[in-house]
Amino acid sequence: MQGRDVTNLERELESAEANYRLFKENNVRAISVMGALGSGKTSLIERMITRLKPCGTGMGTICADCAGDDDHQRFLACGVQSVQVNTKDNCCLDAPSVKLALQSLSLETIDLLFIENVGTLICPADFPVGAELELIVISVSEGESVVRKHPKIFSQTDLVVVNKIDLADAVNVNPRIIVADYARLNPHGKVILADVFHNRGINALLQALKIECATERW
Ligand SMILES: Nc1nc2c(ncn2[C@@H]2O[C@H](COP(=O)(O)OP(=O)(O)OP(=O)(O)O)[C@@H](O)[C@H]2O)c(=O)[nH]1
Ligand SMILES: [Mg+2]
Image (cartoon, rainbow, N blue to C red; front, side, top):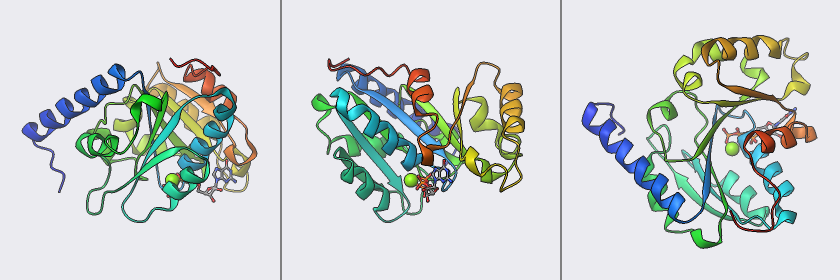
């Protein structure tokens, strides 16, 4: 089981830093994608992959779920390298699991690595994986109070996608309330409004991540 005492946290940070160094040494930009269950993480990554494939960007995914390989199969269907991590009793990925998963990827062919965490807004706040960039995907169906209920992860993550805005009226949620709560909590943070289902917000997100369509490796 994942613990939270100081020794464990130090070990987690050291492992995350080691992953970070490994990514840098291999010119891999690793993006940690977090968010509640069903918020649209896999859909968003699929859209980014589809958008970037014609650019010649080498991409891979590490795909975490407690069980099963549904999302992993979706990524394989996009034609990228992917590794499945089943976290079983642990509520999210940790840096050592990511390190292990990296052994199954050809890092020299990967420019961009998407790391999709288990669907939760709680545990990932305590378990950095060593990614250069981190983003949280919210679905409007999580309600207007989602940021207020999870201050820790939102205060330490500088990029948020508010997704499924096509459903905002149907679920009686005003996305501007979510945006305002996040701005209060994290004044440096950036928000992208998205409707991934209808391919809206993808370009803005790629710009925010400073990902360009390039045929050259970074
Ligand atoms: N209406 C609408 N549906 C969406 C949107 N984005 C994703 N979905 C749907 O939401 C459901 C969950 O999407 P996923 O991408 O699997 O969500 P996830 O966050 O990866 O889910 P977990 O990995 O299980 O936590 C799917 O049925 C998607 O088609 C959107 O912008 N609008
Ligand atoms: Mg998913």
